[in-house]
Length: 371
Image 1 (cartoon, one colour):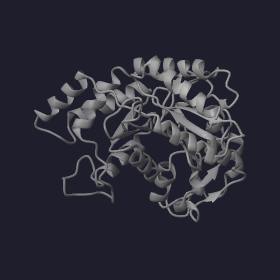
Image 2 (cartoon, rainbow, N blue to C red):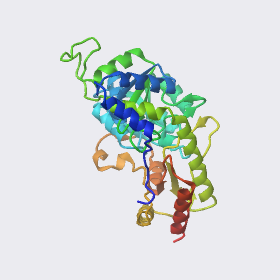
Image 3 (cartoon, helix red, strand yellow):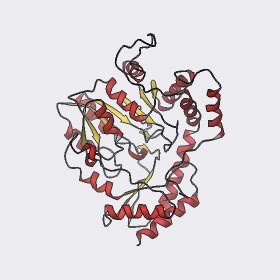
């Protein structure tokens, strides 16, 4: 592709940090892991951080550490990456799919409250595309019903709700660092929390159930192999140092897209600002007007690719995926989720994207929409 959907930004300082670990004596569970966890916790405004090999693993561990298991239900959005439901199923609980809000594409608090039942144990709110959900209302609901709220901020590191970093507001928060994210560790994720007991259990679970004071061959409980290597941690430390400047750069790219696509009645653009939130732009995702069908959208994505421009169709509704047609349950009407999923196109978006590339994407999309 001439213009890819995403592209990780690796600088000389990143390479030097990784190479330094290769010259050292330790490749796992070393000082870089501890340094990375401290740095992420400090950045997010949380007391603790527990690094793992993916955001999915971190979400799975958060649920398991909270005691979520068989017979429990967890409220999740269906308009999200499928990992959010997979983690619930790995915890042997049942995902309950709930509707989204039209402007943020995040969980609708009214729909969440209606979905709460006797078996509800947790809510997983996803800050979709880096846009914070309405945490004020969602936290109030969780506290009123005495259920845990977990923030899936895998797409939203650096985003803020009323001046506080997302991920730090719920019982636990999750970040992910896949190469398409605002910052990357190659593969990796982090659980953040202010809960001492949750932290201690998460550390055990990520490392085969080993306790801090136990011998390597002694396990306190059944755990997982979710460790994050020192190499990845070193890369994360280096990338985190410039994250704020990266977020500002991505804000600028989003504004360039908004200018380039303004006035086109065939496209609904994402909101650039909210009075109580700061977006950490993960993708720039537009919605086609209702006159376009899913087949039309897919054809446009294909035609963009033929012109060297890679686009995505984030997200397919989880409740309609073959693997979930008989798993979980729907709560209420999900027509907005389904209609939105049929019309979304995620445009190329990465740290070093140029204004010229934004212009090329915008003009090409506009021409294709005209037919």
